[in-house]
Image (cartoon, rainbow, N blue to C red; front, side):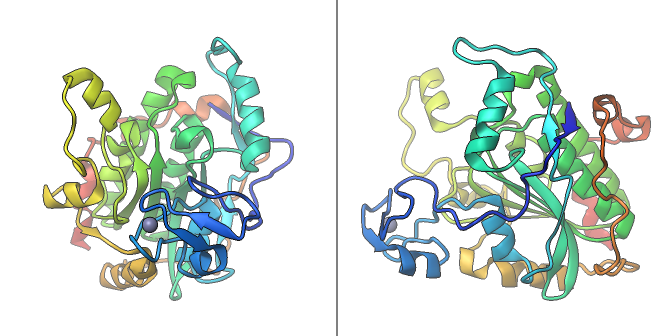
Length: 328
Ligand SMILES: [Zn+2]
């Protein structure tokens, strides 16, 4: 369930240093993996990758956009869309409505995903990018809606679609509305596959739960950053349930690559070139030029009902149909 916020705070963010081991406005950064002390300036030049052990620090959604797209080409859509509180959810300490407000102020984003379009080496694509800082990148109705709209813009313009995932799973505060997003995004991807438009999924650290179980794993090509935690249930949950200690590295990108669940593990500095190569390889005939304004411009008011009750043609589409999109 979603609505438009009165004032958007979803624009490009100032440079933010975030994630484990990072103190804001600090000259030095400590790598959480190898404990190496890194100069902030070198670390940023190295795209926030540890020069000693190759640990890929988490990026914010806007940092990710800057990394992947041509400079200045990103046009954000639906920045003002915010969650409503469909269940009037209250935890022991805080209501969901308060939690949302707190997170929006803290992270300076309206939700755990941004979406829009842009170009990579001049080639257009529609994309949605998640941000782990906002309630652990959890997927509520707004995240699901933004991902779905990114796919639908791809369908409308015949642009390839990219979704960059990082998520702790479905957002429990929205209950089954969160779970519905899995079916909604998968159904939209099935339609994209039927239209022979490619869908690329980039999985970053960490990606778990309902996001792993839906659009993150439905890519025609699935890429992941090195060392990213990728799982349905996180290692802690598995260990608690199975009462066994998991061997080191059983739920990371290298492991899922080895077991055929993804197509490649790509270093951050190679991501942009890899994406450009894929866009050239899977060029869609009849694609609209990126310079044209998209018709899916932000709306002043989005009715919650329209976000959840989608056309029956979508719900008929089978989950997993997006895998067929390579035929073009
Ligand atoms: Zn390191």
